[in-house]
Image 1: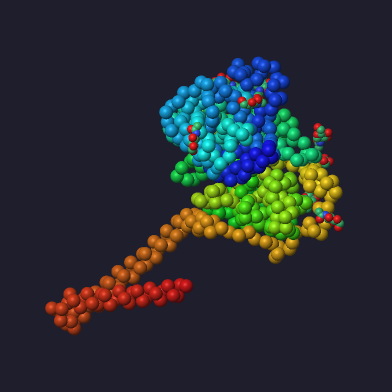
Image 2: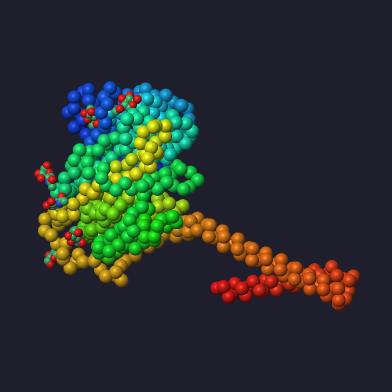
Length: 534
Ligand SMILES: *[C@@H]1O[C@H](CO)[C@@H](O)[C@H](O)[C@H]1NC(C)=O
Ligand SMILES: *[C@@H]1O[C@H](CO)[C@@H](O)[C@H](O)[C@H]1NC(C)=O
Ligand SMILES: *[C@@H]1O[C@H](CO)[C@@H](O)[C@H](O)[C@H]1NC(C)=O
Ligand SMILES: *[C@@H]1O[C@H](CO)[C@@H](O)[C@H](O)[C@H]1NC(C)=O
Ligand SMILES: *[C@@H]1O[C@H](CO)[C@@H](O)[C@H](O)[C@H]1NC(C)=O
Ligand SMILES: *[C@@H]1O[C@H](CO)[C@@H](O)[C@H](O)[C@H]1NC(C)=O
Ligand SMILES: *[C@@H]1O[C@H](CO)[C@@H](O)[C@H](O)[C@H]1NC(C)=O
Ligand SMILES: *[C@@H]1O[C@H](CO)[C@@H](O)[C@H](O)[C@H]1NC(C)=O
């Protein structure tokens, strides 16, 4: 039963869409109960920072409790959106009578904007704005049965739909409020995700921290600071935690960089734009990248139901990302997943290739990013997100926002844990059956009609300045030719008339005829021109 529910949740997260993706849950574990009562969530008087244990169910469910208006509520954590919504009854809340809806691929959270007092770890916020959603039946899964009753967005404040609607600092996101009100702290949070099914590498519990580095992981502060790209779009509602990889920053299973040209016009040559979004169970990558990872595996099959590759569960694949000169390997247990109960065309149980071709709902229509690195990547790093000047109305920490990543994946240990989990302890990763096919035999996944259309629109949108200039030049040339023809012919006519070759009484009529004739010539000339051009 549990596994069925989790499976549907996995699907839910799997299909969650980019801007308001359903996400990444962190459950405050019962360990909190061991603490002295005064140190627990009610601790308004405490000046301590916050470390919340993160519970993981089947690598797709991470939930934390918040206390809102006097009720303790488990919510999903989402770095890909910036709003808080909850369902159910809130004992002490004020309905502002302003309706709003937040769209997710799996349904819409619809309700009134409310305010209520919030406790999040040791932090308290008065009159936090949030959306109270009375009816979640529009979601394609039973949210409450899946163990959460809301979602908290941890993205930049500028991405908040509620703030945008209220057009007022009162609508600020939870973390913005926390950072504004506790000005002695640094404006950052950090996340460590655990991995189920991994007996060797021991991150048994995940954590989320606010303004505090997790003990034992202090070296994250000396990792390179990856600058956060600011969207250069009309609306800032899509602002994400996004940055560049290094040049040739994605290493494929054969140890060579995967070649891919960024669709982001401003991306430096060879670098890719990635979004860190815990709302996605499966990282969303360009189709050619997904094909490069899985298309050379013996027995790889494209699965049309999941729109992703499947491979034999025994296949160990190494891939890694490079950021700021550091290499971040991905645990082989994260490159393919056994959590999805999938069989191939021979009826054999197979594993899902987690780096999925970017779905149309996540497609970056304006060419803002190339890939969304969801949980299957984020489990491999301890990640620190510094909001810097994303936070307004504070005098502290006004630098540019940045991201720091500390690798948590030791490939030697990861290899061992793969052998335990998938190969019953017998290392067959060197078998001939596990060797990658030559690049020339790589399989390619089919591109959908919808995707072709989107890719075309994307091309048009991202290239519109060139296309516009091209059209303008073309129009100018045509107009130029017409004017030239017109004047030239007029002048010739005028000269002819001056020489008395044309009867002056019929001047207008012949003039018209000649003009008509000359524009035909112009058309023919243009056809010739185009013919040559092509
Ligand atoms: C989180 O909240 C739920 C629902 O109120 C409650 O049942 C659960 O015990 C809480 N978990 C912790 C760790 O406090
Ligand atoms: C709150 O602060 C106290 C005192 O510094 C600390 O012991 C406790 O762990 C903090 N609580 C959480 C949830 O981080
Ligand atoms: C919730 O909405 C559905 C339709 O989306 C409706 O059938 C149902 O009665 C509503 N439930 C409540 C409690 O309002
Ligand atoms: C944060 O600020 C609020 C409001 O000023 C205050 O009540 C709370 O104690 C502060 N929390 C911490 C952890 O500093
Ligand atoms: C993992 O945890 C177990 C039990 O807590 C411990 O015995 C083992 O040494 C740990 N392994 C690693 C690699 O830390
Ligand atoms: C994966 O990477 C590790 C460490 O670099 C290496 O020892 C191992 O041979 C690689 N395995 C495969 C199948 O590529
Ligand atoms: C990686 O894991 C192996 C095997 O568990 C261990 O011997 C080695 O010390 C680890 N390396 C690092 C850098 O922690
Ligand atoms: C590896 O090779 C051995 C012996 O050739 C065979 O028994 C085994 O099934 C193979 N394992 C895999 C995972 O292909």
